[in-house]
Length: 171
Image (cartoon, rainbow, N blue to C red; front, side):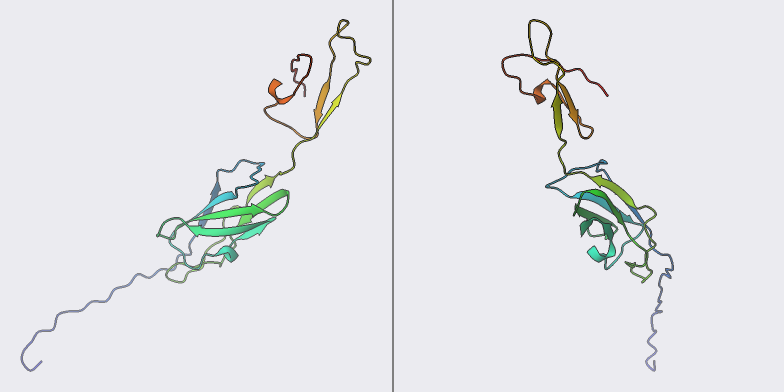
């Protein structure tokens, strides 16, 4: 200026971002699962922070979803999946549903996570070829057949009155 004041040098810089965010889906939920009171929890981890990630950003078959961020960085999100019916439940994130700070739209999740939701208890059928029963002649053999595979079937799973019993597993 006329008073000989020197103007400081001003700089302007910016980052040019053209990279689309990627996303990875992971879960610790076993397959098949039965979580009547709790949801199937899936973690969505983006390669960079994203905006506008909502329930509508996620594609779920045979279920509903609630989306919540994990922390303030907006890279990791929790997806709570509640099955609406039994069978295979799937979750994926299609492309172009969310954006990074530069406006780049996301790539689709590479995987579609699948889990089988089974909320029906197994049914047991009891049969015996030993009739009429005579305890002094031989033991009474009762076969228990389930309509689906079961785990943890032990002596404590059956109530026997006026007798005792043992378990022999067969396929």
